[in-house]
Length: 181
Image (cartoon, rainbow, N blue to C red; front, side, top):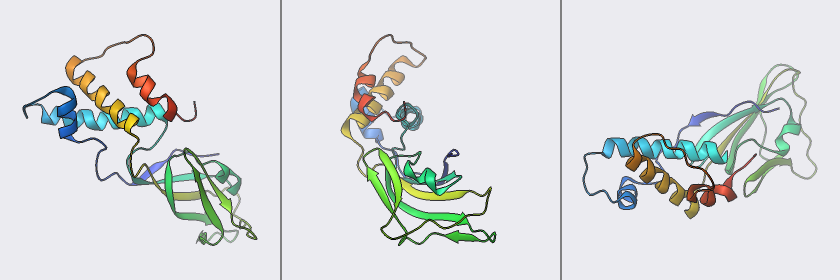
């Protein structure tokens, strides 16, 4: 069983720039730059929730109850495993050596597997295993980036809540990136 992810090191930059947003929304002034900045952040948050992905590079920690849970990580994409920590049977916190496991990042399906000839260590009953991982895209797919720009431009133009029926361009651009639905 996995517990909600927590951010260890937040993203250092957004996925779309103010200049890209202004070009998409045809804005030639700086009066609304603060609003556009908030919309950029909101767009990333919305797309991450919509797709159940972490888009911007950041380090997150996820906790689980046993090594068997590592067969499917609850976050994606994952670029690298920073650490795997656990509590051994004596109650001491340990860091699992990288010689024991390997990351298997098959696009949006991510797991951690034992290397040949290795075994998972025994853990203290009731303790948690913590996996810290570098997540997010090093290069965000163009469809995701364009969907964010569409969302920002629409929300800038409407300045309020809208309800759209049916399948939108936003849905079409992101449907191949949804995970866990």
